[in-house]
Length: 55
Image 1 (cartoon, rainbow, N blue to C red):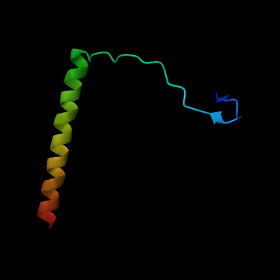
Image 2: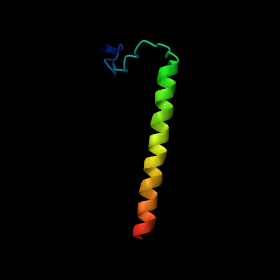
Image 3: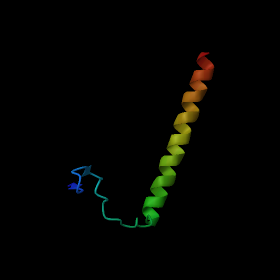
Image 4: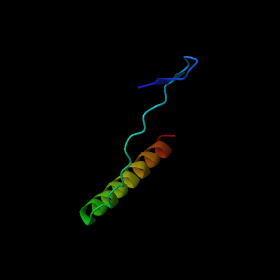
């Protein structure tokens, strides 16, 4: 959508989406996030150790 002023200049601004509030994660989701974080830390540590061993 756009509007024009009396000089014919376009005002095409983005339409802002409706705002909503995020819901707090459930206990199950929190535990899953902790598991994903632990796996990510182990993966990065493992890859770093391989890189140091190979160099």
